[in-house]
Length: 239
Image (tube, rainbow, N blue to C red):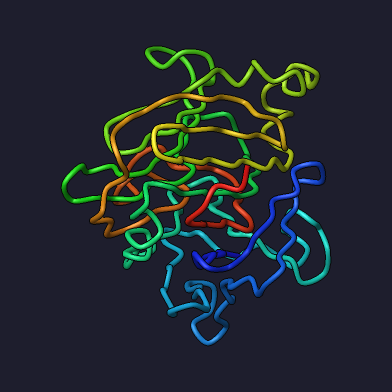
């Protein structure tokens, strides 16, 4: 499901359990059955997102909780991705240069992949997070790009990652990622652990247009082979 958290919605991120607790209504996407397996719609202003190139909703219990009624977006192992044609809601959320993006992810492989990408006509890539490996990017770096600036770090900084003993084993389990920017401070959290902090001075763009989950701009590069669940966007940082 896709969650768009309105700027006045009080949300508390409980990292100890890596789940969301809301004290007001969480406004979230519904899996639209009338157009089978191609569309999801958020409940704030009915922004639509479309499953492309073979991406589907997972089977029942396919989400990170594995409970009945929990579905995820499954990009498969091909060129599938999720496209939000009208991502102008990000312009409202980012006007104070503060944003939180959070989601659960489970991959089928350890190929380079883009978790999310939001397009800005003036800067091309306004928001982006990626996992890259090998030359020239380094050893499984996690990137967080905003405007023209980047914060990154190698995933093997996490003790939990090293405990798996195998990179594929770690990525093929569900993990909770949170990316935040508040003015010049950017943070990446993984499974409730602060993974990286960096400082970028350039503000967020104010002309976001499209957003892609599971791929880069236009869905043409760094396709994610895996699933994303409970993707959330908020206009605040909560920690």
